[in-house]
Amino acid sequence: MRRIDTSERPMPEINPVKVCFVIEKARELFSEDVGMGPDASNPSDDGERIVLTDANGAFRRELIAFIRELDVDESAALVALAWIGRGDYEAEDWPSAVAAAAERREGPTWKYLLDMALLPDYLQDALDAFGRSCEDYELGGD
Image (cartoon, rainbow, N blue to C red; front, side, top):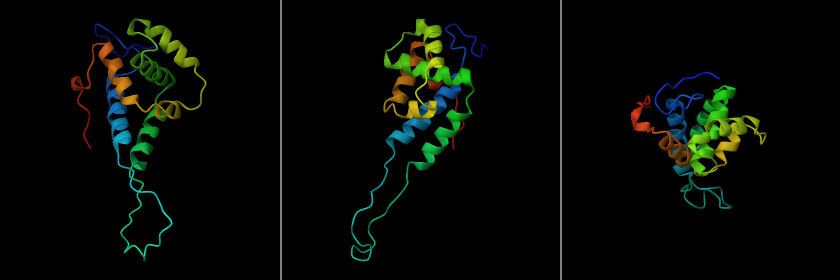
């Protein structure tokens, strides 16, 4: 496997900037107000006050596309980080966590990760376990 991060406590399979991007976008996705769902009312009866939105659709599509673009090693590393942040593995178990994540066969990686409601917290906790913080990396703002 390639080594991207050569600092004191390496996470060799994925660049922390990519992890921070996933954290940022997942926070936006999971905190977004999804608007009101449709109801049985007639818009003309309620003065057109109901507004239906797909507010989190753009965040979701962007995050899914980003995760899909990761290579096999990066995908396994991202899952391993989520598991470390969740407490399934310790940072010292990195090689075992990555190997187990590479063998995971529970559907697409993006779906598996987005089913974790606490994904951004798990990833941040994992970065912390490796002595990293997203504050160390400047993400290109929108």
